[in-house]
Length: 113
Image 1 (cartoon, rainbow, N blue to C red):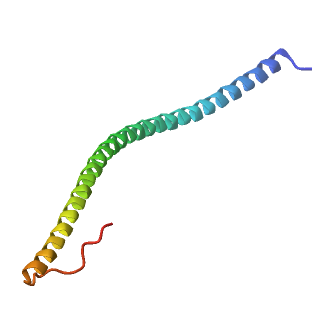
Image 2: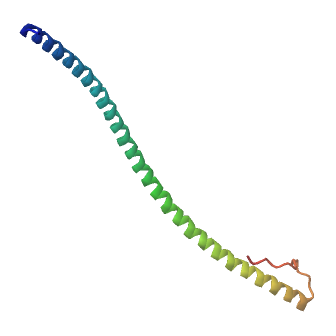
Image 3: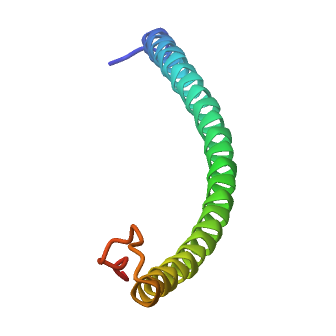
């Protein structure tokens, strides 16, 4: 049979074992907390960087719209110029026939797209 002293000794051993186990668990939990804090900081940094990238992409998209608008204007002006050149070539050919003067005109009109 166990005496009161034996029970107190066993209780003391259990208490010290639990205390040691709690200490090890707390140390592990502290390491986990530190890692989680580090991860939070890194995620915050990534969020900031992503926000910066979003802002830059917004500016790039705005500039791309401006470039597209300008390109459309250039294409329109090119069509007008091509039509005018073709009209001048036809006029020059007609003038060459009427005046019987050779104009340096190629007989291949600019091709429409």
